[in-house]
Length: 66
Length: 136
Image (cartoon, rainbow over all chains, first blue to last red; front, side, top):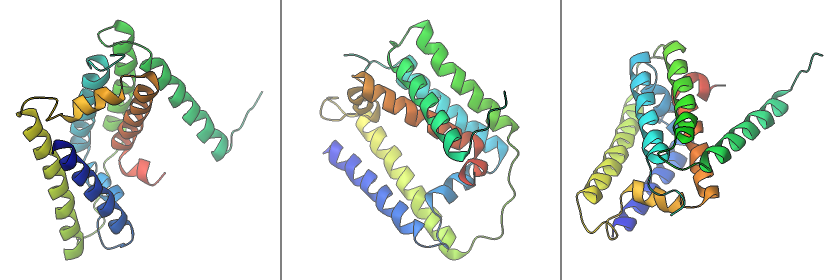
């Protein structure tokens, strides 16, 4: 059930990415990233979240070489 | 000696360097100094790039179709975050895996771990450079 939910969300994101890439007046994935990172303060916050993700997955992750 | 690389040569060098770095990082275990350094270095580089990259001005008033499509992006992000939180607060974990648990399964072997590390590096550069990464 949980996997089905993740699959549905990933599929929706993929479909929406494709649809918006075909219409210049709609916000594409790259437009969304540009809008999200337009302000320097917002960009720094987003990058800090990205740093935390990398630390969580690689420096502190438990999945390596199980 | 003056060596000049074209666009294709530069791309090959960058992709090769990212792949090599990811492979080395993927070979180290969590909770070791080496892995912490290999994660911290790109983190600091991207943070510095995010600070030094200037903000970009808004390119005009967004139309209704732009606002509507942006709202759908927001709905998708909220749905993903909500589903992750639902899994996090559910048990047993085997029946309700979080994204971290799924990622751990992919990263249990070095090639999978290296691939996820390379994707993480690419995402970081895109986020740190913003519009300049998109229009490079």
